[in-house]
Image (cartoon, rainbow, N blue to C red):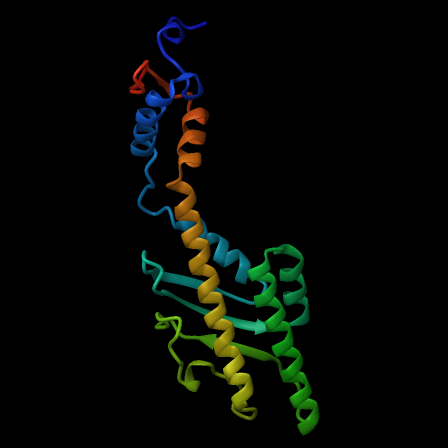
Length: 203
């Protein structure tokens, strides 16, 4: 046993009063770094990768908006892969709506006797407010197959739903890395020890 161990304590070994002090110290030591959101950006990129490329430009720390752009091609293979990899209720709802939209697109093509050249959307970077209605020009499509009003509304809703989902991911991540649970876990992982009053004792 290290001699220091005889004079210091783990978080669990502290009194309740000392734990309150220790928790404040742990929050200070393991406060979120600038750029904590990069891991969420990576998760967003991974989620969208079956559909195509996506780039997140920024977000409001109060959860008001998130700005991103993406070029998506909706296919059965891509959506099936996403459905298999994401089991969360919100994620499943978003993916199911994409699948419904793709099916509707194909039915409309068949009804009109038009060639199915794929459903895709080029989302604009300047989308910041979740409730904003986009101009149709933002959701580009083939010139010989203009977007129907119903499909346009659905593609806008897909982006709105994705914005809300991504903002939730960011909020959940921030809530976690600022939680007592996270601070205590980080203290344990880094073998942080305390004096009897709960102040951190550095080696």
